[in-house]
Structure formats: C-alpha cells, structure tokens
Image (cartoon, rainbow, N blue to C red; front, side, top):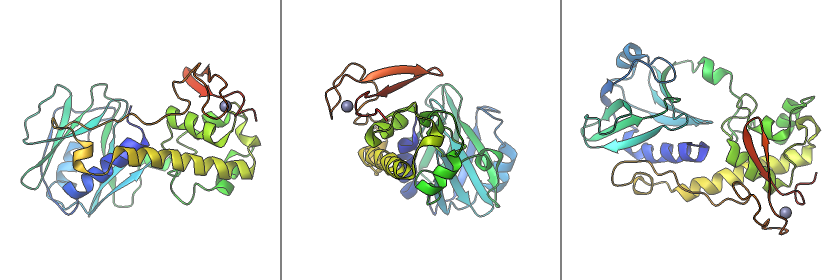
Length: 272
Ligand SMILES: [Zn+2]
C-alpha cells in the first residue's frame, strides 16, 4: 500500500516532469474509481492549464492549476506510471494525462480505492476538510497534539493512525515511530505527556524522512524501465519482526492484533 513516503517520493519525481507544463490531453477509462471522476470539470478546469505546483497533504497530492487543483489519492494499490503514449499498457489503467509533447502519466489502480477529484480555488473539499494536519506541518507540534488528544481514551496507536487527528500515518510508520519513541502502543492517547508527544512527533518525522530519502528523489530512482513506480522496502525495526530480537535490548518483538491490524512492539523498550 502506498504510504506517505511513497506519495512524497512520487511528488518529487513528478515535479521536474509536469510543473510549468500544460496538461494537453486527458483520457478516462472509467466513470469512477473510489468516487466518481469529475471528468467534465477536469476537462474544463485542468486541461490546457499550466501546473504551477504539486502539494502533498497526508497521502493526497494536489496538482495545482490557476482555477484549483486535481486531487489524487493512490488508495490501497494505486500507482502512477510514466509511459510514452496515450495507449493504456495495463489492465487497470483508469486515466491518462499528457503533459507537453512527451510526458504521459498513467493512473493505475487494480483495487480501485484511489481517487481522482477536483478541488476548487478556495481549496475546500470534504475529504481535505475532515483531515488533520500533515505530520510535517507546524500544526503537528507537541502542544497541539496533546490538546487534540485530551480526554481521548483510545490507544495512542489508533490516535496517530486516525487521519482526522494527524494525516497520512499508516500501520508500518505508527509501529516504527512508537518503538523509536519508546511508547507502548496500547497507552491511552489522553495520557501521553507533553515530553512524550515531543519525542513521538520527532520520531514520526524522522521515520518518514528516512523512508523518503531511501526512496530517492529522481525520476530514475522512482520509475523502473517499464514505467512502474518503485515501492521500496524500508529499513524496519519492529514491523513484521515478531519473535526476532529487539535491536535495542534483544527481547523478542511481540505482535498483537487490534481492530484487524497487527501491532509490533517490544514489551521491554515500550513498557510505558
Ligand atoms: Zn527492546
């Protein structure tokens, strides 16, 4: 599943390809993915417009043009492939965008949890309005997070994975960050102290940053020769390491299942 670092890597890979370029053609192969694709609006507002920048908020990408932005989310299995023509090369190609004479971006999503939407100039969109700040945004600081978690009785892991509280932290990064911060994933979010929040947000950022730098920032790093996006294996400390010795204390890593998701942690290092 594409996580925040992959989305950021995709953003960086796309910058030199489409910023300051005009979308000269778009083609859709479905009426909807997760949600209906606003084809008429995109043809009217996005086609023949110059992309001024690409922003990321959590796992959403915003391809900005003067009258608004095209919003992308890769869902569970989405990716963007760089191809050489408007002809779909894969079965699950749902949309193709041409920029300038030779850039063809194919939006591929077998499981169809992704989306292609339109956000008007004022930046308002129900999906974005409900979202908490990006982990790298200044709003994601210890004081603000502690306030947001006040009286929250759910486990800290559930809290940081809730996109309405803080955007874009998936299961892998939640496990890794809590391990790095030495915080038990079952602790009640409302009981996390300011010092712990401070440590946790810096661990969240450093975990994401490490993964972003592992993904590289150039076109060659990101798209393989077939035009596929590279979802790279990140260096993980606890995720998927059940029974393996903890790197800090050698205690075997534990796994517990909570609301259908696996949580990996070290009982010794994450006692509190
Ligand atoms: Zn340990």
